[in-house]
Length: 67
Image (cartoon, rainbow, N blue to C red; front, top):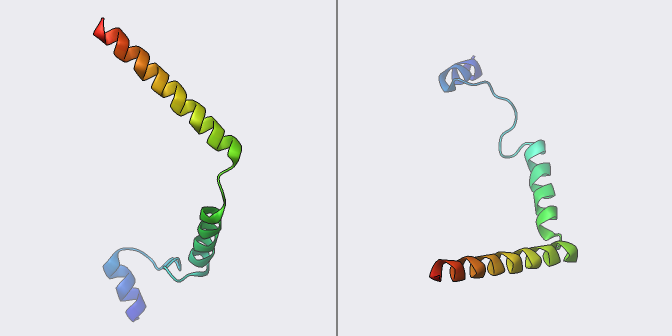
């Protein structure tokens, strides 16, 4: 009876997905494992190329604005 009142007072049903649920624990573990993975070297190379291209583009735009 108290649980029903609590559900009605909060306006939502207890879905079992609290911070200590099994799903929450598994999601935290998965997120932690992903965080510990290294960034692939190919991705780092692509990011460096993108940075270089952006810097070259901004340098081109800056010289055009001076003219």
